[in-house]
Amino acid sequence: MSIVLGYDESAGAARALTVAIEEALAHTEPLVLVYGAAAPGGVGEEYRSHHDALRQVGRTALRHAAEAAEAAGVPTTVEILDDKPATALLAAAERHRARLIVVGSWGESPMRGALLGSTPHKLLHLSTVPVLCVPTEG
Image 1 (cartoon, helix red, strand yellow):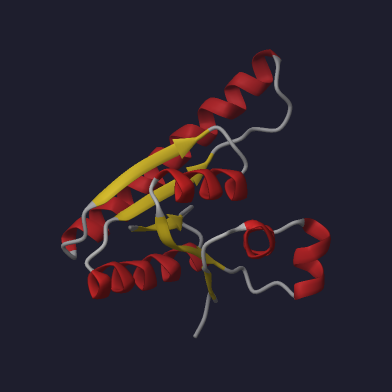
Image 2 (cartoon, rainbow, N blue to C red; image 1 turned 120 degrees about the horizontal axis):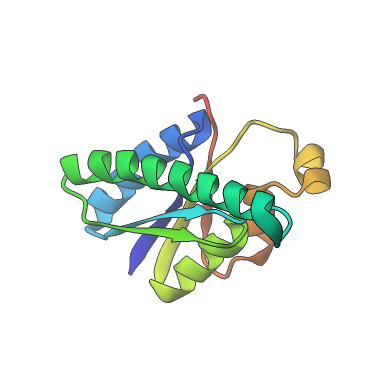
């Protein structure tokens, strides 16, 4: 079993990282850090440039998260996937037999999340494992 965390260095993700580390320590489970790096479009030079930039942002974000988790004594795996965030998290959860998916919340209203398709909203409707949505402030 493992805990999967969606991480992008946003304020919500930073708080979710803290909670995910606490959960991993409490249950002696590894942490799988995931960044979905799907660029819009799909062809051409602009797409490749955007894709490369997203992957670099993901590498930096996940390196910071892995350093924090490892400093706390939590073993980590890092995955940058060429999928939208919700799809990437669901795939990682299945591959790593996750007990829990942890994501940060931007504090948007349920209606806004439903209309805009927020990652937490999608996960709550599609995941077969529990999803913990951590608010930005608390």
